[in-house]
Amino acid sequence: MSEVSIIGINRAKQVCQLHGACPDGSVLFRKRLSRTQVLTFLEKQPRCMVVLDACATAHDWGRCW
Image 1 (cartoon, rainbow, N blue to C red):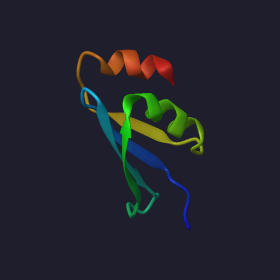
Image 2: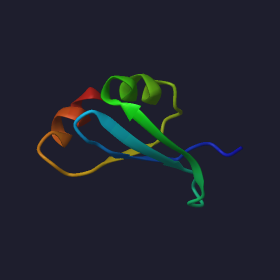
Image 3: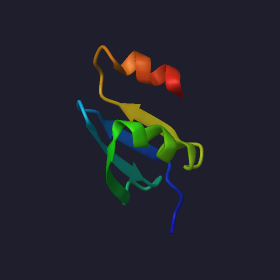
Image 4: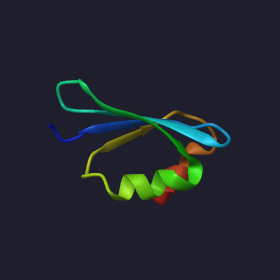
């Protein structure tokens, strides 16, 4: 299995959708996590690019990493 190179996050009020892909663009995972589970999940992933949807709270989330 390839290593994830990019993780896209779509945030909502209670649940976040995560999509992980390898360098060739193939999907490695799709996960639905609560906001409290997101940082714990990301800590276990290899170094990669994390992409957030743009909104006012994206800056706050960006400071967490």
